[in-house]
Image 1: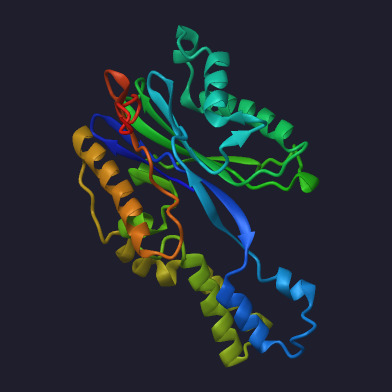
Image 2: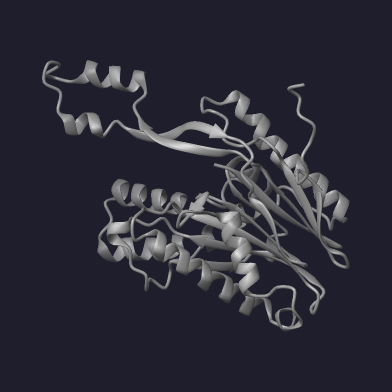
Length: 318
């Protein structure tokens, strides 16, 4: 688990990432098991399949100092959430290898369009994933690729999503294995344990509108006992988005961010991750976001710069 964010400013991009790595294990909550036992008709002969169904994947352990924010080239940075290792290598090692292979310090590289850079980046990443999935499953993993385009004089943020893979059902030719989406228009892009922050910034309906539509259609169909033609008409109307458009837009625009200076974007990035870290205190789950917080910026003139979290500090043991 983690939290990463990139925020566009007038002079570049501010970037933040935590450094917690979380181990996930399947377990059963005691209360859930006891409730199941109470409700069982034959308490001396509980079906194994029923007990197995009670297991849930949940965080069990966290460790600190996992690098999740890297300089890729002079005007680009990469953050990630999900897998820490791919094909037996830490992601930070893979990022360095890809940067070396693409020769990011050369004039030829700097002349490339960002779309070509992302294509090559994903192709090399895919090779590592294919090797990984020969022997292991792969968890859903997302990358945020933050870039200041000097040619177009604008900041760009791309979300690279790699879907979870079961090695026994892996198709290396799947065209949707890696998806790249330009998220620059949002201004603020977050990922990982970002539900609370995302709702704060973009409203509560952005990620749930499809679920709301499905529930509406299902309930209306059942209550009114609609027939096939009526169901199709209702579905088309609700899924057209028009009937919910204004409600969703009003919810999304609950906070109107103005154009930020780079310092303000940096302060906002720090605030967002602090909100996520602090809110964990009041939840039942173990903390999965925190540790050493890394902050960096991509300045329109100077390029990538570390702000904090990249240097060793004196030990507090002595």
